[in-house]
Image (cartoon, rainbow, N blue to C red; front, side):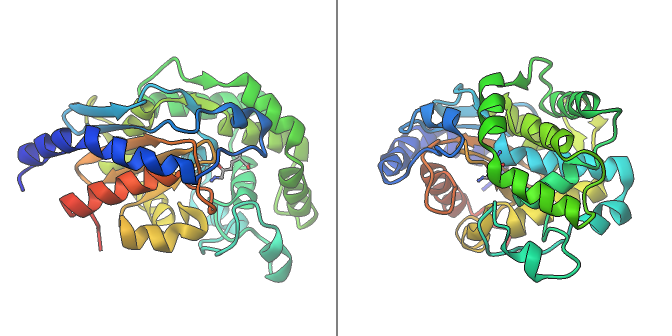
Length: 314
Ligand code: DON
């Protein structure tokens, strides 16, 4: 199918598929371990798909604001790589999937040398947050926010302060992971300051449109096709997409690779960022999560799209 024909076919199919997938939201639950997230609308489902020429398709509640949560980890990894290069980053965090829950502490104790398995689990993302350059947590967070604004081409991106406070007050598991990393000399500096940077980037508020624009940069190997600028070195996009494929959907990444076959990253607010290389950036929101912590309806919708249009990379 040629590109124009496919775009029209996606446009024709999307509204009905969103309504079909939306039915699955009743099988999921919104995250409540961060109390503020429990207020998310459980039956919502929205999608925004953007191509390299800037044409977009939307369906469902695509304008719903939500926090990036773990989706932010892809881009803080990229920023840390741009700040320090591969050797330094991968001395603090590994390259392997875990098969464990995203906030698990299990393998940190079991495996030498005690560095987190990968940058997309919480322990790994906390280690990466400690690598962001800047004089103190405020400057580090400001650098992250300005990088995300550039990628999303949206100067208005900002923190959801209520979600930030809610996670900061209740993030006991993340605190324990961070102190464990400090004890193992993975984290330099003050643990609370590193956590501030981590909680801040998780609380950046976006819509599906913002995610699709950020994903489009990855889909075109670091180029913003709409401005002609190179925003990320190609090698770091390659690394990010590989982690998204092997670890982006947590311990459902293998299942997602089989059923959808695209690099993707989910977050507990119900967002999914994914891309079709050289073609589309895609943002999805569906706050009701399955048992593995991924948007139950969002995954179903992506399965429909990938299956019908043969998007799997494998
Ligand atoms: O650290 C946390 O638990 C959250 N800020 C992010 C976790 C997350 O999004 C995992 N996603 N599925």
